[in-house]
Length: 207
Image (cartoon, rainbow, N blue to C red; front, side, top):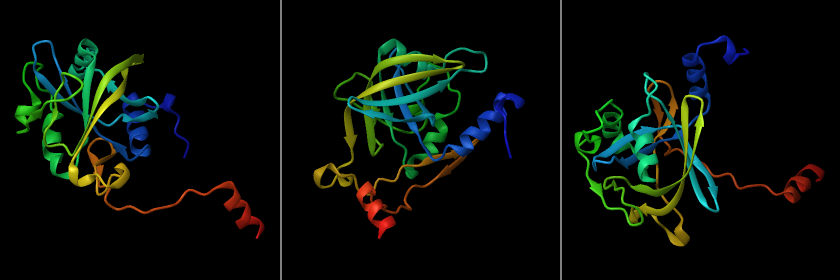
Protein backbone atom coordinates (compact mmCIF):
# COMPACT_ATOMS: atom_id res chain seq x y z
CA UNK A 1 0.00 0.00 0.00
CA UNK A 2 1.19 3.51 -0.81
CA UNK A 3 0.22 6.16 1.74
CA UNK A 4 0.59 9.74 0.54
CA UNK A 5 0.58 12.17 3.50
CA UNK A 6 -0.92 14.86 1.27
CA UNK A 7 -4.06 12.76 0.83
CA UNK A 8 -4.64 12.32 4.55
CA UNK A 9 -5.20 14.49 7.59
CA UNK A 10 -2.27 15.57 9.74
CA UNK A 11 -3.60 13.32 12.50
CA UNK A 12 -3.66 10.30 10.20
CA UNK A 13 -0.13 10.99 8.93
CA UNK A 14 1.06 11.39 12.51
CA UNK A 15 -0.42 8.03 13.40
CA UNK A 16 1.31 6.28 10.49
CA UNK A 17 4.68 7.90 11.27
CA UNK A 18 4.59 7.16 14.99
CA UNK A 19 3.56 3.56 14.41
CA UNK A 20 6.38 2.91 11.93
CA UNK A 21 9.36 4.71 13.45
CA UNK A 22 9.61 2.51 16.53
CA UNK A 23 10.63 1.95 19.21
CA UNK A 24 11.35 5.50 20.30
CA UNK A 25 12.90 6.32 23.67
CA UNK A 26 10.92 8.58 25.97
CA UNK A 27 12.41 11.86 27.14
CA UNK A 28 10.79 12.54 30.51
CA UNK A 29 11.78 16.18 30.73
CA UNK A 30 12.11 18.27 33.85
CA UNK A 31 12.16 22.02 33.32
CA UNK A 32 11.52 25.03 35.54
CA UNK A 33 9.39 28.12 34.91
CA UNK A 34 10.14 31.67 36.05
CA UNK A 35 8.20 31.13 39.28
CA UNK A 36 10.38 28.12 40.14
CA UNK A 37 7.70 25.48 39.53
CA UNK A 38 9.13 22.20 38.25
CA UNK A 39 7.42 20.95 35.11
CA UNK A 40 7.58 17.28 34.13
CA UNK A 41 6.42 15.98 30.74
CA UNK A 42 7.09 12.96 28.47
CA UNK A 43 8.10 13.28 24.80
CA UNK A 44 8.74 10.41 22.40
CA UNK A 45 10.05 12.51 19.51
CA UNK A 46 13.48 12.19 21.12
CA UNK A 47 16.90 10.72 20.47
CA UNK A 48 20.67 11.15 20.69
CA UNK A 49 22.06 12.81 17.54
CA UNK A 50 25.76 13.33 18.22
CA UNK A 51 28.65 12.33 20.47
CA UNK A 52 31.16 15.14 19.95
CA UNK A 53 29.65 17.23 21.44
CA UNK A 54 27.03 15.09 23.16
CA UNK A 55 23.76 16.24 21.60
CA UNK A 56 20.18 15.09 22.14
CA UNK A 57 17.14 16.36 20.28
CA UNK A 58 13.51 16.67 21.37
CA UNK A 59 10.55 17.55 19.16
CA UNK A 60 7.82 19.42 21.03
CA UNK A 61 4.42 20.07 19.49
CA UNK A 62 2.12 22.94 20.34
CA UNK A 63 -1.13 23.06 22.26
CA UNK A 64 -4.39 22.80 20.29
CA UNK A 65 -4.74 26.59 20.42
CA UNK A 66 -1.27 27.04 18.89
CA UNK A 67 0.45 28.24 22.05
CA UNK A 68 3.77 26.69 23.16
CA UNK A 69 3.78 23.92 25.73
CA UNK A 70 5.22 24.59 29.17
CA UNK A 71 8.37 22.53 28.50
CA UNK A 72 9.13 24.46 25.31
CA UNK A 73 8.67 27.84 26.98
CA UNK A 74 10.62 26.87 30.11
CA UNK A 75 13.63 25.56 28.19
CA UNK A 76 13.84 28.65 26.03
CA UNK A 77 13.55 30.93 29.07
CA UNK A 78 16.08 29.14 31.30
CA UNK A 79 18.39 27.49 28.75
CA UNK A 80 18.44 24.16 30.59
CA UNK A 81 16.52 20.92 31.08
CA UNK A 82 16.97 17.33 32.23
CA UNK A 83 16.04 14.22 30.26
CA UNK A 84 15.04 11.47 32.67
CA UNK A 85 14.70 7.99 31.18
CA UNK A 86 11.59 5.95 31.93
CA UNK A 87 11.79 2.37 33.19
CA UNK A 88 8.78 0.14 33.76
CA UNK A 89 8.27 0.90 37.44
CA UNK A 90 7.80 4.58 36.53
CA UNK A 91 5.20 4.09 33.79
CA UNK A 92 2.20 5.01 35.94
CA UNK A 93 3.89 8.19 37.12
CA UNK A 94 4.88 9.06 33.56
CA UNK A 95 1.26 8.66 32.49
CA UNK A 96 0.16 11.09 35.20
CA UNK A 97 2.73 13.65 34.10
CA UNK A 98 1.35 13.61 30.55
CA UNK A 99 -1.93 15.17 31.70
CA UNK A 100 -2.61 18.85 30.96
CA UNK A 101 -1.68 20.31 34.35
CA UNK A 102 -1.71 24.12 34.66
CA UNK A 103 1.74 25.80 34.61
CA UNK A 104 1.64 26.64 38.33
CA UNK A 105 1.08 23.02 39.42
CA UNK A 106 4.01 20.60 39.38
CA UNK A 107 3.56 17.17 37.81
CA UNK A 108 6.44 15.94 39.99
CA UNK A 109 4.31 16.39 43.12
CA UNK A 110 1.14 15.12 41.47
CA UNK A 111 2.88 11.90 40.37
CA UNK A 112 4.28 11.25 43.85
CA UNK A 113 7.90 11.77 42.76
CA UNK A 114 10.84 13.66 44.24
CA UNK A 115 13.26 16.05 42.60
CA UNK A 116 17.03 15.79 43.16
CA UNK A 117 19.64 18.49 42.54
CA UNK A 118 21.56 18.54 39.30
CA UNK A 119 25.30 19.23 39.29
CA UNK A 120 25.86 21.43 36.22
CA UNK A 121 22.51 23.18 35.79
CA UNK A 122 19.86 24.68 38.06
CA UNK A 123 17.02 22.47 36.78
CA UNK A 124 16.55 19.41 39.03
CA UNK A 125 16.36 15.80 37.86
CA UNK A 126 14.04 13.04 39.07
CA UNK A 127 15.38 11.14 42.07
CA UNK A 128 13.57 7.95 41.01
CA UNK A 129 14.96 7.80 37.48
CA UNK A 130 17.72 5.24 36.91
CA UNK A 131 19.32 7.51 34.33
CA UNK A 132 19.15 11.27 33.79
CA UNK A 133 20.90 13.61 31.37
CA UNK A 134 21.56 17.19 32.40
CA UNK A 135 21.31 19.35 29.28
CA UNK A 136 22.09 22.93 28.31
CA UNK A 137 20.09 24.39 25.45
CA UNK A 138 22.20 24.53 22.28
CA UNK A 139 19.75 25.51 19.56
CA UNK A 140 16.04 25.96 18.93
CA UNK A 141 14.46 25.49 15.51
CA UNK A 142 10.85 26.06 14.49
CA UNK A 143 9.64 23.16 12.34
CA UNK A 144 6.09 23.85 11.26
CA UNK A 145 3.88 23.30 14.29
CA UNK A 146 6.78 21.83 16.26
CA UNK A 147 9.80 23.15 18.11
CA UNK A 148 13.06 21.26 17.74
CA UNK A 149 15.14 21.52 20.91
CA UNK A 150 18.82 20.57 20.65
CA UNK A 151 20.53 20.14 23.99
CA UNK A 152 24.12 19.41 24.95
CA UNK A 153 24.50 16.76 27.63
CA UNK A 154 26.75 18.17 30.36
CA UNK A 155 26.28 15.51 33.05
CA UNK A 156 25.05 11.92 33.29
CA UNK A 157 23.38 10.44 36.36
CA UNK A 158 23.27 6.63 36.24
CA UNK A 159 22.27 4.23 39.02
CA UNK A 160 25.35 2.54 40.46
CA UNK A 161 24.10 -0.99 39.80
CA UNK A 162 23.91 -0.28 36.05
CA UNK A 163 27.52 0.79 35.55
CA UNK A 164 30.08 -1.90 34.81
CA UNK A 165 33.76 -1.87 33.82
CA UNK A 166 34.79 0.71 31.22
CA UNK A 167 31.47 2.53 31.80
CA UNK A 168 29.51 -0.25 30.12
CA UNK A 169 25.83 0.02 31.04
CA UNK A 170 24.36 -3.31 32.12
CA UNK A 171 20.73 -4.25 32.70
CA UNK A 172 19.20 -0.92 31.72
CA UNK A 173 15.77 -1.52 30.17
CA UNK A 174 13.92 1.72 29.46
CA UNK A 175 10.41 1.71 28.04
CA UNK A 176 9.95 2.54 24.35
CA UNK A 177 7.06 4.17 22.52
CA UNK A 178 5.59 1.92 19.85
CA UNK A 179 2.68 3.91 18.47
CA UNK A 180 -0.14 6.36 18.87
CA UNK A 181 -2.01 6.82 21.03
CA UNK A 182 -0.77 4.69 23.92
CA UNK A 183 1.30 1.69 22.79
CA UNK A 184 4.64 1.00 24.52
CA UNK A 185 7.21 -1.78 24.63
CA UNK A 186 9.76 -3.27 26.98
CA UNK A 187 13.40 -3.37 25.92
CA UNK A 188 14.53 -6.29 28.05
CA UNK A 189 14.52 -8.80 25.16
CA UNK A 190 17.85 -8.26 23.40
CA UNK A 191 20.37 -10.00 21.18
CA UNK A 192 23.93 -9.26 20.14
CA UNK A 193 25.01 -8.89 16.51
CA UNK A 194 28.72 -7.98 16.11
CA UNK A 195 29.36 -5.45 13.36
CA UNK A 196 30.83 -6.92 10.18
CA UNK A 197 33.88 -5.47 8.44
CA UNK A 198 34.26 -5.27 4.68
CA UNK A 199 37.11 -7.81 4.86
CA UNK A 200 34.83 -10.28 6.65
CA UNK A 201 32.06 -9.78 4.11
CA UNK A 202 34.47 -10.23 1.22
CA UNK A 203 35.86 -13.43 2.73
CA UNK A 204 32.38 -14.88 3.20
CA UNK A 205 31.29 -14.07 -0.35
CA UNK A 206 34.50 -15.22 -2.05
CA UNK A 207 35.14 -18.28 0.05
